[in-house]
Image (cartoon, rainbow, N blue to C red; front, side):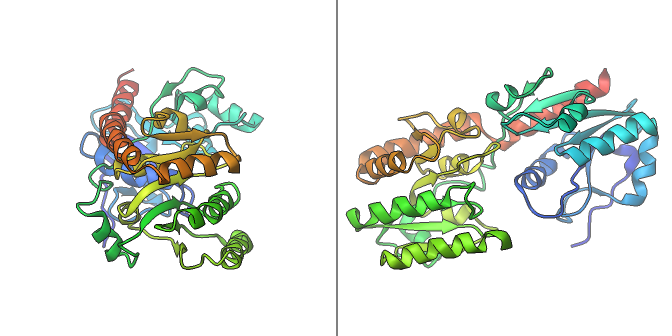
Length: 353
């Protein structure tokens, strides 16, 4: 598919993406830009993005030194340090008519270099209230949303399992994301090794990939599963681009992260009609209503994970109620279109000022 050609004179917002490898930030851009393009002239810049997005070419960058058609300036929306730096250089060294906005998802104290760059932004966005607490500058909270057309409950959960080669007669509990210590995949595996013998009707699904530096970690988990005699019930299914299909057979989702910037998987599960057990990291406490859509547990607490997951696995009525509550909450408060509209409103205000 040929890349979308972009008329730079009509671009009022530039979204740089300087990281080639797929990440949560890249995924956010991929989902938001098509919606925003229906409301404002917007284009991406950089590698690692699909061709269906509006893209500037590197040779068009000098054109950013000129004003766009019908506006006094453009907005440069950065989400990483190198992208903030590029915006500062364009605006302050080359005098490009730009206003700079940065989105922070980090829940830790920023380095001096990052703080230096953030102070040079014209506006700063935090993806959650927790993130906002780590910022030393005025900011606006704009929480992530998800595509509720893509993530939705199945018409038939057993049939959804059958289509993926899973046993349609079993209930499934899932854990999705990169396989690594930070993501807590080991906690999930250990919890399932403890729980599955007590719940013979359940199986567990681990979806995601281990990057080369984490292959040994994954191998160790698989070895634990083998030793427990559960290789046929704790399934490592790899990475899938159509991950929405893997939520639909689930009856419970666990987000075991030890650290997270925001974390979309609980929302994806809730929008798919699945109750969630999640550690209290990232924005999870702002996404999940404890006891209503799932359960929040302390980070890195295997005992709490086993207890919470076991309670839900043994409570069919509770799972049904939580699934409905989570679906309603996701659709009312965390729709991707709402995030896109909030950002476009900010862009338009910055361009007018």
